[in-house]
Each structure stands twice: as C-alpha cells, then as structure tokens.
Image 1 (cartoon, one colour):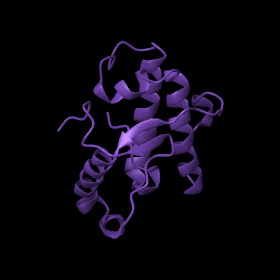
Image 2: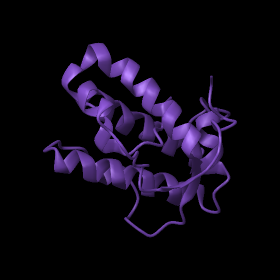
Image 3: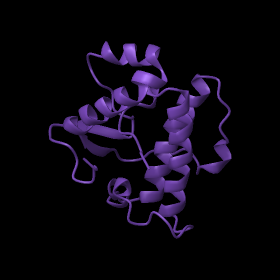
Length: 142
C-alpha cells in the first residue's frame, strides 16, 4: 500500500488509479470493515489523526478531484461527504524520498512524466498534508 504524501498531480494514470484503490482499501481498514492491513505503517498517520475516517475521506476527495481534472470517472459515492479536516504533518525528507521513489517508477513506465518530475523545483505535498522540516518518516519502509 502506498498512500502518497506527494500531490496526486505528480502521478501518472496508472499511479492515480492505484492510489484511488489503495485509498479505498485504507478507508475500509480505518472503518474496521476488513481484516487485512490493520497494522500497515502507512496508516499510522491517519490513525494518529483526531478523526481517522474523516482524514482518509479528505485524502480521497483530493485524489478524486485530480481524477476529475484529468477526465477520469471515479465513483465518488465510495467516499464520505466532503468536509474540512485538520492537516497531517509530513516531513520534507519524506516528500523527497517519495519523489525519488516515483521517479524510479516513472523512468520506464511514463518517460514524459518522468522528465517533468526532473524539472520540479518546489515539491507540492498532497493537500491534506502540511510540510515540516525533517527526515524520512518513521513509518516509511526504507
């Protein structure tokens, strides 16, 4: 499971669809509607939120909005109502780590998007996250 801290606009089509599916799985885990993935480290930051299920729905709304912007048809009925949510901190070290991970994936899978990533000067986090100084997050598999 990869719940990107990077803005979903950086992802290619395959990555955006995968993020939607994995976000929906994370939603089910946080709603206690599945037996698997309960202890997945990517969920730690959502579980630490005051309202974990609201946080994952907020996360998914931003993914949905990116999909709509690209002309994709994701089923918005799968997520809760759109509402305000307090931001989750993410380190700049984590964002850089994820950018490098994404570059590795896109180098072969989508060379044009890979070249655009090389030109990125200022990284944007997923809108649910607020960037802070720091190293790779403790929950990240290195």
